[in-house]
Image (tube, rainbow, N blue to C red):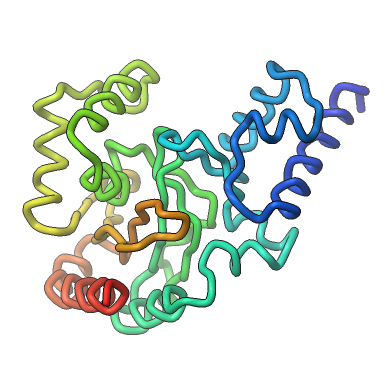
Length: 245
């Protein structure tokens, strides 16, 4: 192993340890100042950790935060992300009521990143680990997150998504048609968007941790979700109403 590889690995763990000390979202400058890293290499390493699914990036606040994928490195991550409130219990209730895989997601730059996953016990069901990322404009929970934003911010993200080549380029009208469909229904129903035969029904979560918008959804086989759509939507709305109250 080269010296540069050892240094990169050392810095990656130092970054995670910095989060363990502060236990809150951190801006790049805060990390660079504390760890005395060069700006170019420090920024590149943070982007790599985001791409690998270990950190998520909040583009609006320009802060980073660990994903549930590294929860095994420190027991503080679930407690800091979910606190002592009713969210985890509400997710478990939704899982029990729908029988589907339940996913909690947050925006990480141009993606929706799964920060908590409760898999279904049914055989051949959806299996996705925490840290999984999906394109904002191409995924159900991504569209849910977009629907909570103001139109000018959605347009800025659309241009960045098109420039980054995240799926087929979308016009403003195409993007807003997708977002407004979610707004009109109050939830998203994505079918076969990422994996053939797999879909997700999701909605925006009120009062997310750290003031951010989170999306929650029930994912599974499209045919089953279509049969249970009314039931799943009712369970989602009940969950969101209880959390808002």
